[in-house]
Length: 148
Image (cartoon, rainbow, N blue to C red):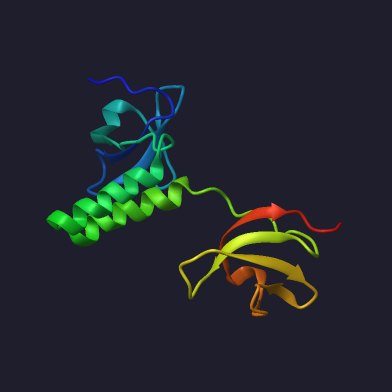
């Protein structure tokens, strides 16, 4: 039987069930599942470890490559779903909202090109005087912290 290291996450099927559950290998050698509790290797009829990819090297390149492959050769929804998951799992957390007079570069949901936005008393404004709330700015990057 294959030895699984503690921390391994797998889809497992307990011998007393027809359904699958996600479980983690505990350091005491048991599988722990929220649905079925703890069980030993001999209480499991099938184990399928989940594949974990290290996408920190160049995640945007990887997702773009998958999207290009999908465009050029087909594959559609499944490959696009994989690319979306790579993007979601590797993007940086959203920055906290800067104080008054803070400046960020961000996109508005309706546009694709990033613009500079300044935190004013009514919300965030761009160079054209368009106001929007912080929640509507997509992927903001800090240019200047605001006044405290």
